Amino acid sequence: NEFGKEFDTLVISLQNPSAKEYKIQNRWHYIRQVEGEANVPEYKVKETSGIYNPETKLLEEAETLDHYSFDIKDHSALTDFCKEKKIDLVVIGPEQPLVDGLSDHLRNEGFKVFGPSASAARIESSKSFAKKIMIDAGVPTAKYIEFTFTQFNETLKYLESVNYPTVIKADGLAAGKGVLICFNKKEAESAIREIFEYKIFGDSGNKLIIEEFLEGEEASIFAITDGENFICLPAAQDH
Image 1 (cartoon, rainbow, N blue to C red):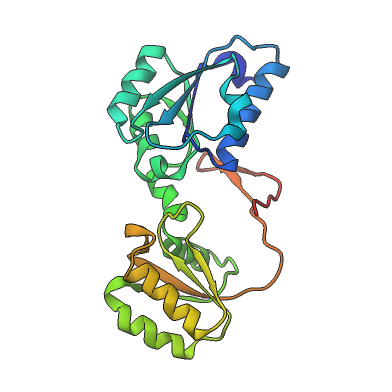
Image 2: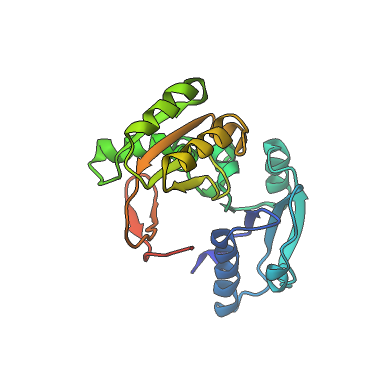
């Protein structure tokens, strides 16, 4: 809660923010209001390509926010902006800039950043990598197998041995749309073709995993860590 008093903050989000990004923005604004620091500078950078979300109109018009549009892939421009505005803390919401190494770039330039390194962000950007991490750490997870687009025929053949329903996931980032639940072999074959042949997820579908279907309640638990210590946030559901 002290950050609002001590830091000029840059909040990076997309023009159509996810629920997570919206919550980060909204909570930051709330903390500063409660702490009586409504005039503390805060800047929100938005990607130049995107769709304005009318549901966030109230947040967009908050008097405490100054808005700037950048190409979020232009790390040098963002660095220059942070230097010009004397930004102390950068909060990065969306996954893609983290995967692209924006947090590493800014840290190397001396800025404090809330967001994982590109290496740590692989847990989000590669489902097969995340599965390997869980298996190595002894974390219970559904059984799976991975295939690349060069193994198209092998993937279809594997479907003959699958118990249905089964889950097929594009390995890379897919804006939360990369998971397909298939209730029979015909649906699974169609999913494989859509991912590998028709490229519905682009390069994010160059690899996929086929995972056993688990029935039950689903929840996400986030941990915030500095690399040595961590705290867990309450369980959440975004579906």
